[in-house]
Image 1 (cartoon, rainbow, N blue to C red):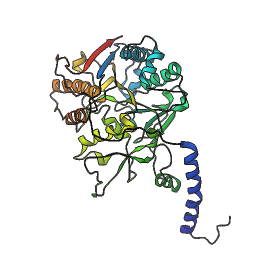
Image 2: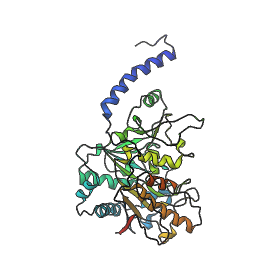
Image 3: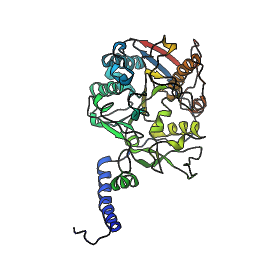
Image 4: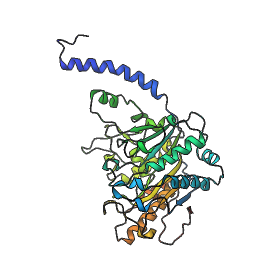
Length: 396
């Protein structure tokens, strides 16, 4: 085609129209149909789910103290011990001796060809090794068992965090299988901008999966913002949540419930969930997790407590915990109940912060989550056993 004599605006219009048809067709061809997740996002007939068990798996050898360097802390994790922790934990949690049977108990109604979405906490990924993220080695252990024990095709596993780019050096090179990575998308080119506007790809919002928010969500100018579940979740049959053991600067902890702030997509196309950190923070956490694509698809929560963070916003670097005998927690947490798991992790964080005389922030969101039927809320003080949560520890 000859573009001589055509002005820039006309060319851009032609270019956009030429690509729109391609993107629409490719969108349908590549991503297929979303998976329905009834019932609806209703708060009627609320019932607390049974099975609020939380298992902590601890191995004193999972972090090599001889090789620990804060600036490359991930290199200190012993993958062989981590594999043992996960397999032992999954067996203990399900009370199944056979690992394959244990995973099939977890992946409700799994069948060949089902897609599995995994949500880690990569919030500080762009800070390198300065702060803590969900350990790629723990993700790799999960992926390994899904592939080798369950028989999942690697191309049916989708690791996603939509607020961050997922780099090779810290994450992808530590995953031993060719899984899919769904990451933050930026509007740097005309095509990228069109992809955003056409809701192209698994990182984009599914407009049929709006989140019912009790508080109005608005941007810095007061304009309303709608919130959606992304296609990577709506088109998956199963969801595995992999949060961190960490405090938060606004609430008591940032666990499995808060981890889904990195799931939500917004009508203003912002990648980061700034609009959720206002006065409606507590309710937003609960409302997101109430959505059936999250609530009904989450099969297991595997929390990373290998290093843990108790002083986010108050300290710097990796610090040992006084409540863990001046060592790192060296633990993972397993549960099907996000509220119970977050309650346990919040209790651990609160106890450590009290030792350091750091301020203790609100657990209102956990109480609200229990009130909306998402699980069991209970905070345990030092040496006080849980009464409502079935909490146990497996030491390997």
